[in-house]
Image (cartoon, rainbow, N blue to C red; front, side, top):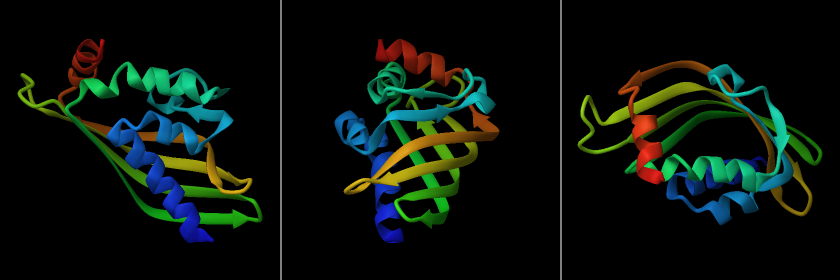
Length: 146
């Protein structure tokens, strides 16, 4: 059963990196609790998945590549619910960017999942640690994605 949880988490972040928005949405509950407040975003809230993905679509496609590396996955399962804690390194690339082509964010996730005929993510809380690289890349990516 924990392998199914692991697969769901890995498929979700792979879908984000591949810009497979339908695939990502299919792995999310509605509502979905998103909390990136430690990284300067508004306080965590229960949101409609399409609203979250619309926000990500406004920036992530502006990068040439992104890579979310998670591990190790610390999984706690209680019946049809689970919590996954993991470190994350999220690397974002724009080739030929003046000032450096990489922007990497380090932190950890607490992911919640529910099983209602299959595992889906019901929440993501990010705890920011530090970042490295070209801090101008997010703005460049937004411009490129527009």
